[in-house]
Amino acid sequence: MTDHPPLAEAVRSADCLFDQAALSAAIERLGIAITSDLHGEVPVFLTVMNGALIFAGALSLAVSTDLEFDYVHATRYRGGTRGHDLLWLKQPRLSLQGRTVLLVDDILDEGYTLKAIRDFCLDQGAKRVLIVVLCEKKHGRCVSDLSADYVGVEVPDRYVFGYGMDYYEQGRNLPAIYALRNDA
Image (cartoon, rainbow, N blue to C red; front, side, top):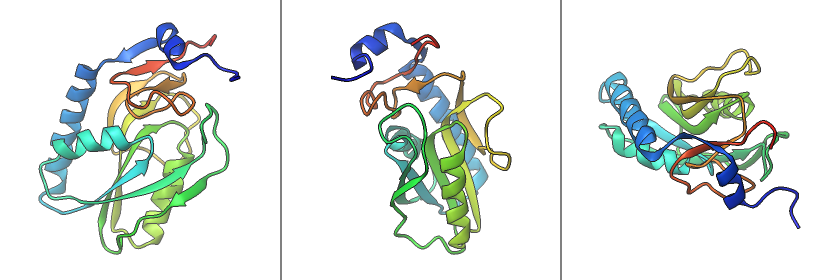
């Protein structure tokens, strides 16, 4: 027995913030901006698993320059809706020394996970780390020295899921982004 409604019920009672068409348009816009800013450079395209998987796949197709792919797996949520201490499951295999890293994640919320991964990349000798997120939450709780270089869409300060982001480890494959209502 779970202590939360099933996914189908959560979707029915949630607000759809962005449908697939809106997300595709935002990703295309990001791809154009990133391509322009890289000036032909070949960055390490570093996907934060599992949440960024769907976004990263679509984004990589929208970036018109060569990319070298790797991923990291670090999490604070572990299947819930509230964060805990960072748990590293996989670090990148590619050398980051002297490289530009496109650090691709699903969401910038409070920023603890992204900050830890960004700092790790810099400690490994990355020349620069450009943070790309599908969603950014607007609130005053983000760690002070972190911001995204590229943001697809802004979401309210509510629990969001779909398009890579999970609802209790489900719903990552939903083609839209939903937000739980504050009373849920």
